[in-house]
Image (tube, rainbow, N blue to C red; front, side, top):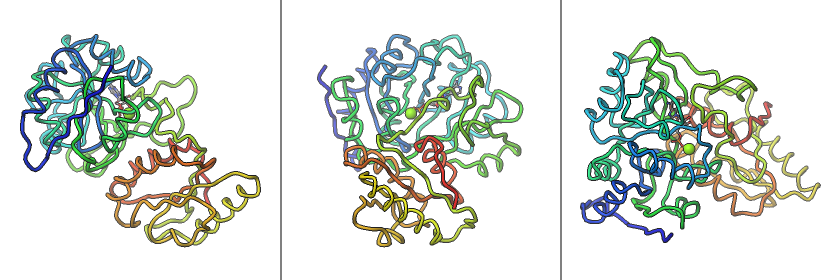
Length: 358
Ligand code: AMP
Ligand code: MG
């Protein structure tokens, strides 16, 4: 299959190019498109066959459900059995935006879209290109991240092209995304909502609207054998770079700059790897990038106190490391007040929970 790339101009967004992509979606084809979080790989969510093609293109396990994207709040009604009070409040507060909610699904949503579950994940993206494309397609659009399963999520159209060329009909190139980590996921089917995946809508922002929120244990650590995480995607190794990744974390970090302990540990690890003939990469920030030896491939995520920049650059740099010749990567940790939870959730998963506390 030949994959067509359609570039759109955000400053003067016209329907012209999007109409073709919308038609492809309506006809059961696959279209990758930008959202404010990461690029999504879209198909008609109400067409089981179209949704199945997403799994094939990504190499995604068929029990890992898709998120349905809608362009107006009223489109939710047909997809779900009921909208609980908590869900209603959260959607009033944060839609359109980087918040996905889990509801009991209605009969129009095929099991191919929900990975066999009786619940459905829905989100209304806050991106003009995504919103207009979905609106023009006149169908709800199932769209997981547009990467090959197991690779870092795409934050630019080039990343989608690397993974999906020849596998899908269209890539809509709307430039780099804004946030760079995937949406927050909250299950609102129980009385007390449960956070299943941290994102740009933080725990604190959720609690402010609905009071109490529980946290799925799968967020904090590896999923134990025999235990079924609520978000099936949590059991798969995600965002995995090809090189082995180790996170070095400050035991007593309290919001300030990274400690000299972390820097020295990474320096020692790099030199130890070098002795073993292994080339090392380092993920750090502008403040520390000059403290590391030139023998390593050094990449800065930006200024440490700019959480948005760190989140925005994270997946691109993990992806870049895949094309560089490194055997092992050492990364500083990036706890922060807002996006910190989401950043560290993705990084610890990428590291396969390989964390050194110093
Ligand atoms: P992605 O869009 O690639 O980030 O993947 C979608 C994420 O949403 C995965 O982690 C899924 O496990 C999760 N998800 C989708 N639908 C449901 C659902 N019905 N219940 C729980 N988690 C879901
Ligand atoms: Mg994904």
